[in-house]
Length: 241
Image (cartoon, rainbow, N blue to C red; front, side, top):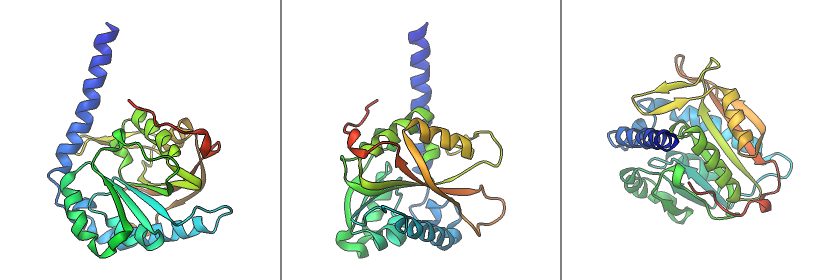
């Protein structure tokens, strides 16, 4: 019986990711497509992220500005308007190969600032050890199941340099409930649930801020600056499924 239940759980997990991939395969590879038809909020979004990132650089023992990772990068909107402004090199990880094909042209004006490109889902990704000053995760974590969410962030800890940080920018529910979107195969979590998952992954939030000036009717968007509870050097290997 246990084997059957485990198999059903695995199949449900596979469906969750397959359904999401199928949804995004039909989304236009444009800024408007990346923002779910709300392309007009891009400037506001980047402005809020700019303010938050700038405040992180003013903290005691701030991260460096050498290398950033854009998680769930899509066509590279955040890399283009935010990360390449502040970092010498930016890597991208994105499961949709069409988006990455567009990104190569979309980011062409950023030249050698664009580094490695990883065509895979975050549930499969393991960063190189101690490579990144900032790992940026925005509007993508709803596509990870809870166990993969924790595993991914455990893996991200291995990829941080000394003083490195993980930045999360995500929709949150106003209730205490996780809300499921069956159209794009995603979940939206309440803030307390996000904090619980961060804690399970050995991370602590040292700064938080809500994105302002978004249109009414959208989910509240919160930003978190996360650091490992222990020293980065204690985490050397990625955890595989």
